[in-house]
Length: 436
Ligand SMILES: [Zn+2]
Image (cartoon, rainbow, N blue to C red; front, side, top):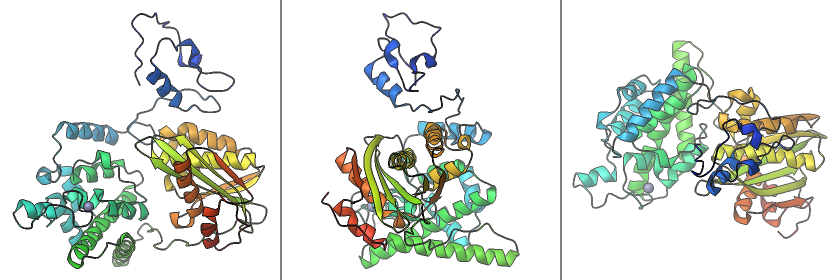
């Protein structure tokens, strides 16, 4: 962020950022420069999180997750900038970057998947928009939502019914709708954003191909048979088809393929071991207001509800919201006097950031991850793990409640009545209810 000193003020060139950080509280203290900056700038500065330990500055390249520069990310940044300069014209992907074709033809996938992606990239699928343009059909509108023209991008990435498919799949992907221009750009940007070895990246891109193919199949079935589309069927069928293809390839080539995540992860919440408290955390994120709703549920080894918390916070992304939820969960458990804990979140990225060395995680999360490590050091015993969303419903419920209430709510020993059904579904005893 570039600050704009007011023209009639003198700026002390020797001042450093540390002069506006309170050395005791490690919080922003803008008193010294308050007269130099606007209210909006002061607000923006105060939103920048600081590490609790006051670590030294770190130079980051903002276009990679870790903040480290790579040639690939440099190329990607240039590519995205050149795409932005082109006029936005979805579904006119006839002149795709040759990198996209390379990506598609190098996929480890059966010809039908590659061929389907080729047709999607060439914009020659029989979507409503394409049929309407060729004067076949009476409307270009999406047969499922009826709200927008059914372009390739709308059908595969933007329509509301595909959102739970991308997020609920093992890729756990939130599609950033605001950044989508064309399908080929999205595919290329996504592949550039992947970390890991080439085998892992290739498997992920193959998963993308399978998911797109099964979305198309379900969309056609829905359009013909006029029944609501099922995101769950697409998730299960695409995953099963991918597993079976990769397994067949592995036995054919007699080489070990990287493991594919289980199609059916555990379906039920499980209590922690004796003497340990399980902290389930979750966050909802509002992209318009950059706000997070955070939910935390504490239960003991008998599965009994000990305490719950719902609060809101500023967050610039869903992953920031999820990571803040872990921090709130830790701090809440500390306040409640617990010393042995296990933390469960349904954010794979947040959990993997904590499992790795913190500087290797997403650089924007660095101060929050440091705060989590700092908080966790006060526990005698602390572990964290990822769980599917389907067994994190209690925390998910309180996160949604937090979004509605926009204020701090704490429940001790007795959960809010609206949570009883979910706790009960987790298959464990509940204390008497108390009206929310
Ligand atoms: Zn639609």
